[in-house]
Image 1 (spheres, rainbow, N blue to C red):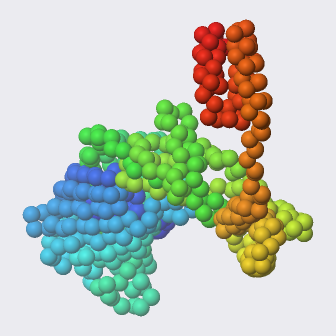
Image 2 (cartoon, one colour):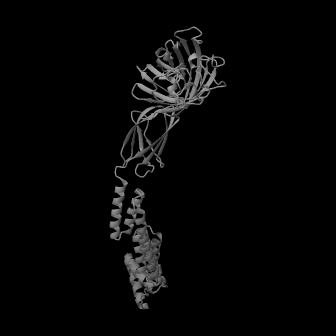
Image 3 (tube, rainbow, N blue to C red):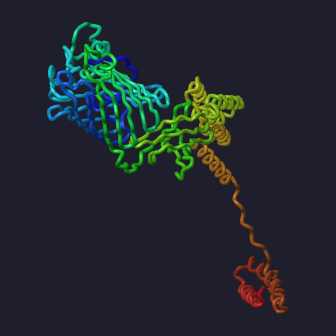
Length: 533
């Protein structure tokens, strides 16, 4: 019969009376291998320490084999072989990993098999199995469900506790206090009991373990180095502490040896890393944030329009610096683990100047410009305020009121301009369109109308100008013309070609048909040409 003293700890996951990396001794823990894929195999053997006569100890020696595999750091499936007929399948799942003050939590199902009763010693009650487990009512071990939690309380102390059914239930003089049937004074095949234990790490390689459940009270020592684990334990210690002549049953010496997949180094695989960086005040993504990896050769990365960075990193611990002008700088450590194929980090940056303060300044400037009649400058400051922090109390309403007033003024000036144009008062119309441009410098209609009306005024000025009168021909008598011709010929003969040319042109202006004047003008011009004048 089995009895237990203490139940301390939090929960775990593994195999019924098979010792592996995921058990204390026999009870499961919530600590799972961190590798994406994992395997382990080994054996557990136990030997009765006293009263080896068959009437007291029908199974003085047993030998059990097991193999298990894990994946994604959250799932474990194991196969255990007690005898050729005692074969069971186990499954466990880690719900959450240990974080801060929250323990690791896992659930599991042991003894997925075709037999109602299954035991390392083999056989069904009343003859089969360990003698101290054949209670008047033995809970069937098939589908032994459990939930367990595991927490590191100090640097070297781990506590483990959980609830389970089936193989965790005992009805000994003391162990009965550990199951829920104690409160009903009855037996139930699907009742639950509690289990737990402590793991104290003497060194990084050696641990001392103490555990209890509804059937056994065990203690042992474990040596673990990377891919190999060796455990030496004493099981069923309740027979020493509370056995006596009335219950002359034997404790057992248990030996375990196992190896796991860490003996084959995993090929390094990059982890997909995603940064999502937001403004803490308005919860919007930030473009152009610089992310640097200190003490590495990795070049800085920058966020895109969506505030994200996508990259790949090998597993390891990185010190990152996250900075952007106008925001407080962040330094943080990130742990990139092979356990996760993708790591998504959401980060919020705090502005150096709060947006509420910036919006307050923009509003103050907008109102001041409005009082001066500078509607366009006021509009720009309102829009800066909206871009900075649209959720600012009353901002959208005030901006809408301003827009209505501004648009109303534009429409009034436009109507005035069109009215002036219809009356033909083009300069007044231009002044009205200029008032529209002052209100809205980007108003293309006003700009086009000013050009159109200015051109129209210019055309009107041209049409109202008097035409220029052509100069009248000089009036000379025939005798005057002949006298001028004689003088021109004389000047030509004296080689005064410039004077001759001047006189000849006057003659031709008064008498274009004068052939002698034409003849001498041609001669004069040729002479001047020869002289280079």
